[in-house]
Image (cartoon, rainbow, N blue to C red; front, side):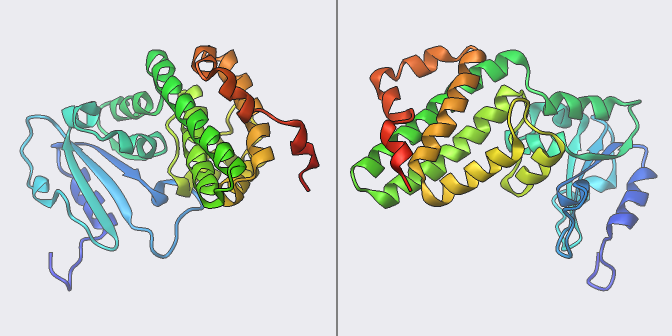
Length: 252
């Protein structure tokens, strides 16, 4: 392609749809999220080709321009062997442009968007422990007068908390850009979206200790109900520092 004839999204889709080697086209990113498109949004497109097919479209793998980014993969790669875990949320909310597999592309996306029960159980324990660790450090640093460290640990804890809450629901955590979009359309069961987002915002910005402790009581309840009490109990008496204190009510 020349500078005078850039490859546009519409022109590429037309070309790919006419190529029998292409079995699927999947659009991800802002263009797949209603209301998130800006003047700077390009089209992030996965081009899925049959495993043994020959096509000149493979020569466009890695194409990047202000309008169009292309990833060309085989069907086997798209099924998961060569896909990064980082892409999981992108596929959860991706838009199918072409599916020549009688719904096969849609089924692959659905499988990637939903964690299986064993995977979720395993990962939740790790995220819960990481959340508790950062919360504990934040509260302890606040107690000891290390205000910057306390705020940084509080912000870290929110990252782990979000991973935990979405994993408990067997969903991939959205990228930060799409967190509010995701929760507005697909709330987490048992959580008030507005309250959760305000808490995450405030704790990330200020490290508010009473708020951290209050939020932990809700997380502890949800985690224990989901069968992760053992992870919390391993913290022993240190849990007391994470739970609400009488002095918290005296905080202005």
